[in-house]
Image (cartoon, rainbow, N blue to C red; front, side, top):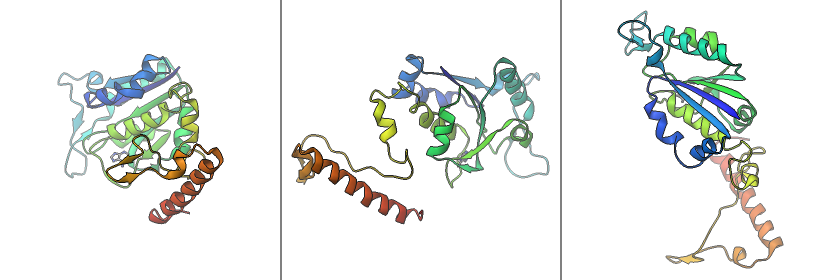
Length: 227
Ligand code: ADE
C-alpha cells in the first residue's frame, strides 16, 4: 500500500477533501494510507510557536525550521521516502508525467508551507521535488498538496472502478483531449446529443470520437500556446 505523509500548519484544511469520494474510498480499500501531521505538535518550545518574523524584514511571518526538522527527521527514521515534495510557486510545473512518476512510489512526503512561506533551510535540506501547480499564488501549499494527492491516488491500480478509465484519460499518454461525453436525456432544453452516439454503430462512433478528440486537442494547443 502506498503511504503519503503531509505536514501542515493547518491540517484541518485537508480533512474534508481527503475524506470524500474516491480518495476516501481508496483509503478504505487500503490502496493508500494518508497521514496528516500537525506542525504545531512538533513545536517543542513552551509557547509552541511555529512562526516568526523574517530576517531582513518584509511583511508577513515565516514558518520556523525546527518543527519541520523534528517532524521530517522522525518520519525519515521510520521509513524511506521515494519523493519529498515541496509545493511552491517557484517549483517545476506539475503535469501528468510527474503524477505518473509519483504514483509508482511506495512512500511520499509532502511539506505544505503556509503564511508567507517556510524557512528555506527546510526545502534545501529535504525537498527532492519542488512543484508549482500553476502560475498563480495560493495562501499555502495545502491546496497544491491536495491536487498532487488527488492526481496520484487515482492512478493507483484498483482505485478507479473502471481500471481503463485512468489510462484512457485526457493527457495520460501525451497531451490528448478526449471527445465530449453525454448521457440521457438525448434531447434537453432543445439541445441534442450528437446523432452518431445514438446509432449504436461502433465504427462510426469510434471515428467520431477520434475526430472530436483531434479537433479539441488542436483547439487546446492553440488557446494554451503549446505544441
Ligand atoms: N504555494 C503557493 N502557491 C503555489 C503554487 N502555485 N503551486 C504550488 N504551491 C504553491
